[in-house]
Length: 570
Image 1 (tube, rainbow, N blue to C red):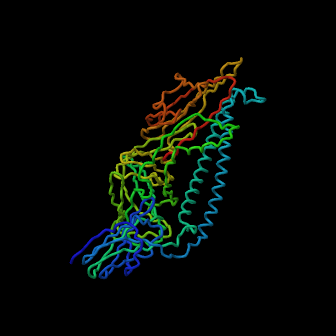
Image 2: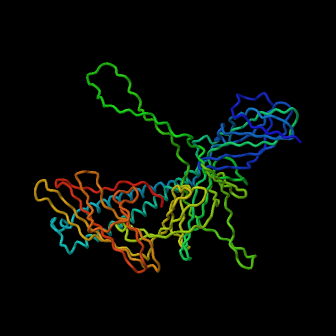
Image 3: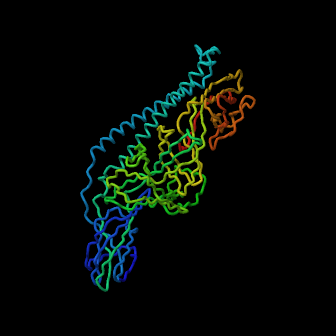
């Protein structure tokens, strides 16, 4: 038997109405899903007539990219594949709004507004407390007089307790707001969109020509929107063995609303973003000149102002959305064997290249076409972990357990949520940023109740200027004590801050004689934040002292501001 393979020239023909048509019955065989779309591959068979004719693949989604269509054919005789004609076809009725989804969205949006109001109120409360803390005890007594020195520790303790309580409230409400926003995003992805042209379908007509009848097989692939996958993770920390380790599971949540049935398909997940830009944006020169105000008495017509020279950078919103469904570990046992044996987990095969990674999901998978999530396991591995404790005593007088590991897989970890478990107990949800192969990763695993942290202001002394032009000073001293109740040594990092200024009239001076030298004077790009890292033996404690003096003109008042920080991966 003689076979022939041909690839179609990818252009749209003006029309092939003069040739005989025959339908191409096909099925979806393979799908490659990207974070922002998918490439679908169909297989079909047709009996080609002698001479020129058309093979028509009907009812494809209206969202296909015509320029992405590729056609290959082979048969028991010679034939050629010519132009590909993509044309609109009538589709189904417009989708009907789901009453259940709309009701849930209404409730969630009301809850979101309520939580945003609570956050604003709590932040106002925190600002008030911080403003109150800037007033020295020498002014807190009756009629603005000095408070007795014996009452100062109680005032400091009250301020610290109030700030910790407000911070806890703020963290809790922000967490609930993030959960509500993520659930709203998930429901909006799942709802029908009547405003879109959902009824539009497309037919693909393939021009073929054969010198004699041929039994042919065709492979047709095309890119379609309305599909995506997002990563989520599970990290299980075990501290009870000889060495701590993390069992890390990488999963993918796949959704599709393409209008096609993806039943029993070979599934590949790719890290490539197929709908994003392919080149860096163009940057045009920028000229600076003096501003020339318009003349009030000018009557002559002025030339039109040139448009701004800075071109806006092209950007596309990534379709990565955080899924809110909490993942639970599934265990199966087989009673046929004399001793129960845990079921093996099927994982994907990784094909990693220099610029992308593909995950070949084992077997065949069915993805619902209504936007419901389908979760598959991509990788599963155990990693040696290093344990440490981190504390920020100014905000919370407690330490948190952190476990670090090195990501040694070929494929990067894409940004996503991670469910955290510590010694079999669910701790909460964290998040990965983008983690490249070889990067060090640190995850928080909840409060460490065997490390006791105390933090207290020791002294605050602020002078009042007695004559015109005299400077004012504010001296502050703090004491932090960290005690370990663990049975083995533990590494601890303490974070504290010293105010910084960009105003030359304000001076901030660290008092070296009353400050424990930090191991890091500046933590990363956080100005004024220092770190003390040390090993703490069982039953021992470490004292950290901090003291600084602020000096500024006596006729001015100070304000303490917290510049916003970029979000960090937890």
